[in-house]
Image (cartoon, rainbow, N blue to C red; front, side, top):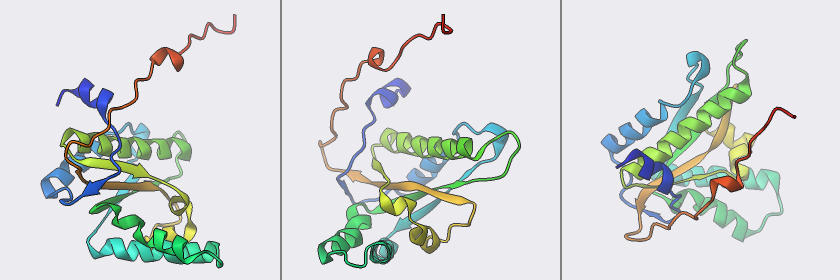
Length: 189
């Protein structure tokens, strides 16, 4: 795939089916992720792959989290939380590994981990895979972080859902005009 075509046309794919990426595809996804900008060569990221029955356990972890945050939540909300990880055959949890460093603040390290996640998304699209990066309340929940065994210096940045897109159902990205987002700064003069 042409690199500019990839950059101009990648879209999130929310309807994902089996098969999940195979080992060779997954290896390429992570190789692309590891090319993210990385000031100080800290490699401030790691990834957890969740598939098979582990997706059901993640759903139960979401249910536990929801019950802790809202003891009066509805059965419908619990069922929705339980089914979230089942929307794709594979999930990749994106984790920022924040380190104390005199020249690279934690915020920059989190941005580097986010860039790694974006590289993974681009590599998925380049291979014809479907992918969507999801966040939401569970991405910022301490109970979920503990359940995923994150260390105190780690932050969950989200879940990348991966699978096969529905045949012929990739959406066309919206046409955006760069001039709507770009301006010149003239030094305050």
